[in-house]
Image (tube, rainbow, N blue to C red; front, side, top):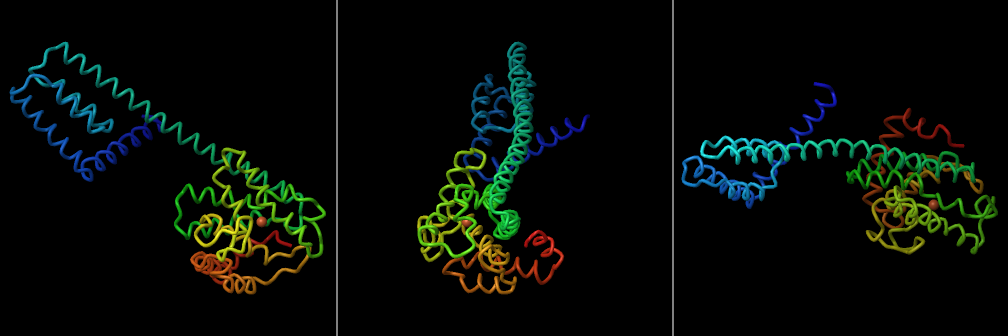
Length: 320
Ligand SMILES: [Fe+2]
């Protein structure tokens, strides 16, 4: 058997096992249907009934997995009382079922390959956009990538779903993509911004969300891009959302973004040390940042900066 066929058989077996376990052990309705089916079979075997149609109808209600359909069809086909032509049509039904299910398995295989390609495409696109932003402002070199790495680690420690983790990672990479649309005079200004310039700078969240929204593969990242400057106390922007109104991936990105921004030199100020930046994050827990995420952040920080200096050096190797 080839490797592909082996994998296919394994997937099919696994799926049959999982489905069968889920159906009969956890669902009382299905359990009743299954026992009703057993009774019908006994009646057929004992010759009390001559038509297997009831059995087929009951069996259908079980939404059986592939492995059980063929064994069921075999049991019916082997009943001695059945006429030959009926047996033949049952065999035909069984083989149709088998083909349908093998197509589904193949479909699942192709589907997972497509998913992998989509995820790859997702990150290529996100990275390309992040590079485009950093080309506008080389002073922030590597910021998007470090925010991506920090947010990825925080997400893993928050036990979020696989899909949310994917959107978090993409969103963290793209959080400042809207800066593409901010004028040089504002984006690269060496001194403090005026009120109107600051308002213009804040628009990068809206511009970014508009860019990301238009790309179907990145659509799930919109929350992180649009809302990474919201604050727990409601004084953030662009919408002034409060607490848990701010989606989780935006709350995580906010901590990762603020930390990295503080620890790297900017055109208008010098970097804080990692210890000073940590203190700032802790000081703003509950007002700017979600305290639960700050707790997770502290664990990540200790793992990275105290227990594993090589890891922290690697993370900040390109920072200026
Ligand atoms: Fe930002």
